Amino acid sequence: MGVLAEPMLSALGMSRSELGLTVAAISGVCGLSSIWLGHFADRRGGRATLLLVFGLGTATFVGIAIAPTFALLIVAAVLAGLSQGAANPATNRVVLDSLAAGRRGLLTGVKQAGEMGAIVLAGAALPLAAVAIGWRGTVALVAAVPAAAIIATLVLLPRRIPPATTVSTSDPRAPISRDVWWLTAYTTIMGVSGGAVSTYLPLYAQQSVGVSAVTAGQVLAVTGLVAIPGRILWGRRAERAGTFPTQLMVLAGLAMVAAALLWAGSAFGVGFLWAGAVGWGVSQLSFGAVSTLAVMTYAARHAVGKATGVVLVGFSVGLMLGPALFGWLIDLTNGYSVGFGAVVLVLGSATLVSWAWRHGPAAATLSVPESQTERGA
Image 1 (tube, one colour):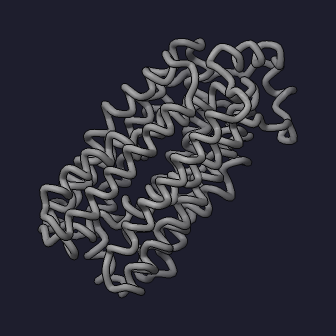
Image 2 (cartoon, rainbow, N blue to C red; image 1 turned 30 degrees about the vertical axis):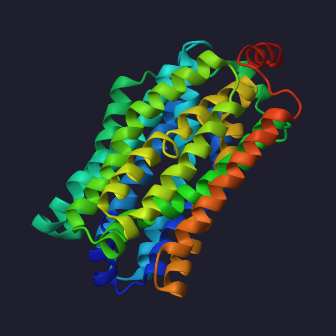
């Protein structure tokens, strides 16, 4: 959405606020469906849930490519939200069922880095493809990716029959731990900032910093490129450390600095924009590996999908509010300064939340939930 924003706005007669509302619709549907879809992953397993994810993803891109109006684009956004709502519970379930505690950090970072790989490809390739074949042809071509992933899932991921204890103890009414609620609060706030900046960064780079569309796409690609090793390394570090609030606090603080550098790009030049993009990738776009591993650590083994869904609700609410509010501030002030100032303040509140979590009742360590999990199972 962000990379192809300019041609989409022109073709569909959309405002920048409506672009934000479209992204918000994706996040809203993701949040509304994620707990139920997380419970689905707990009961049916990662393989079946991945097939659902990729089927919905294929339908999403086809829908965007053929949408003649803003209203029908929203329909495609609903499908995208359902796909996103199922994605993390599915992949978390696969990691948890495949590896023992102590071996999940690296793979969690790798699978979370896949999202960043998509951002790199989108930022680098989609503007060029849109010039060559138009934005609709480009989106239609992207639909082949989840379609191919359906085949890969069927071939590469063996069918697993969940243990009887998993089915019988997967109670949707089971309580959620205090640490999961802290994590949900943190990810909600981070979602606000991430949704705002990721949606509008290419448009901001063109309209306020003055770079070309291709360069704007490359700026977005850099954020994802840096986040690929960032997520892998942060995931590995988080598992070795055993506790998560401190690392999440550091990541939120670094994201504040990165947002300020992006903001400074409009006044002091493109160098600050590039520096902010690198910092954004290292921090804001890398925290997902730590938060995902934290979910698998703090949740009971039979309810990881559900706990993932709870955290996704918060994150999706943030992703829904961020683009809508940021777009509204852009149109209200006819500029980006107020919006970026708000993002810095939001990230400051995430830093405070993680500090309060760290200094509250002792957060569980990596080994505790595993033992609790075995007792629960």
